[in-house]
Amino acid sequence: MLGLALAGCAGNREPLPVLADAQAGAAAALEAFRAACTRLPAWRDASGLTTAADWVAPCAAAETTTAASFETFQRTHFREVRLGDGQGFATGYFLPEYQAQAKAAPGLVPVLAPPSGRDCSQAPCPTRAEIMGGALAGRAETLLWMDPVDLFFLQVQGSGIARLPNGARAKLAFAGHNGHPYVAIGQLLRARGALAAGAGMAEIRAWLASHPAEREQLLAANPRYIFFRRLAQDAPFPVGALGARLVAGASVAVDPAHVPMGALVRLETQLADGTPFRRVLVAADTGAAIRGANRFDIYFGEGAAAGRLAGGQQARARAVLLLPRSMP
Image (cartoon, rainbow, N blue to C red; front, top):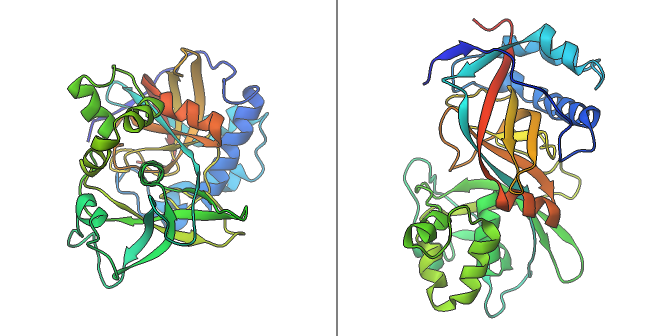
């Protein structure tokens, strides 16, 4: 792990583009941190930087903190730490909504629950290509049926909404994976010269739509396959790897080997259109492609606008962590 360094000032904290003003940003960060606090007492920090006891005082104080006093809350209960030089990279993700069917139909593929009697974390299950070929037929429950490209991008995001023909919305949450490594098909297309540098989700979808004969082969190039579970309508959603509800523009996925869950992340980057993005975010999720001390994936929320922000988000970033003062 990269060495820790006490950080200096992270720069001028301007109003941020995802929310209307700095007060709204502070309120969202507080909401995300309070949600994280419901899970932190039982969470084992893989980075080894914090213990459950370190979060007691900050979580208690957060209950009476307001957006107006959020800066004081940070100064009182946290200290600034930089991982390495603090230079990193920021992408984005969102909660998608796709059409689905309750029964099989031409052109649709199954949305699968984890296979019964198999622990894919101990011994890898079949690859994506093998599953696409029916390797888990009869061994994994089919939750719904969906367009294969929509399912692929649902799996990239990790959770989402399935819209049924009768208007019902099914909550699909991450329930595990097949134990194989994640391969980004966008990187494969860029390496072939099929997409320009910086191309995002919209460009990948357009390429798949214009190359139907190559679609299955490209999707299968990512051997990782995500399984889902269907949540009750009143269940908190979406939730990240921490098990806490995610908050748009305030939750971020990190590499837990380097960044503790619950950590505040003072992140500076820019959106796809060049708009500055300076926010305090809460580490509450992880991702297969999120590896390294300064690698961040911003949760932008639900809907088309969030999807456009997430799909185009690929930018250098600077980060300072805020960790509990009681930490060694």
